[in-house]
Image 1 (cartoon, rainbow, N blue to C red):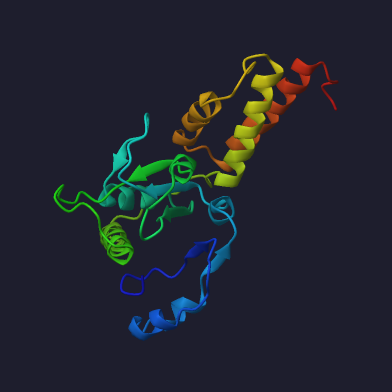
Image 2 (cartoon, one colour):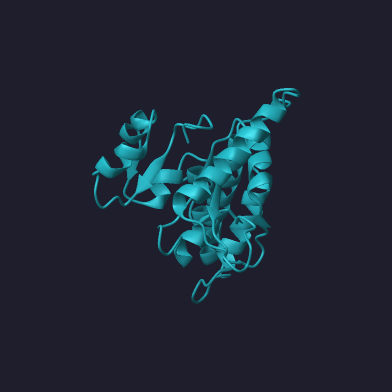
Length: 217
């Protein structure tokens, strides 16, 4: 991270805050070990981000698997919206639930004979690609964009959509993956904060009407 100018990071469900061994090898980057945001859940860690990318070799229907270079270019294209790159446990990677929680997925195109990289190597690859993309973009500044909706705001829209679909009878039994699939289309649309608030207001109002509540309530 220090090699490529990235300083903000978070750790989810940290078991121990003993970074002694890491300090011995973090030459000239020791201050980064004092900066992690300690979060209890992944939702807490990514709540203020507009795009959440999980690093995993798993394949999920409807989600293309991006290369690190593609992720880096897309991160810059989505600026000033914040992006979270989510890395899993050193031994087992991201869980299935964590993979599904991410908006998109990315994997390093390693050789099939040895596809697994350790965590530090994987982070290095993504940091390198992001740095290279940023240096290239300095020559051609991007056009300003509307402030994108955060993951927390999109989660509120998803919850309002779920409430509406239940009120309207679309969700009569187990939810399965219907709401998630519908919400994914909104995430791919890259809603602005204004658009997300408009969706939220509309969904809540229609849900109240479907339940027979007063529209002004």
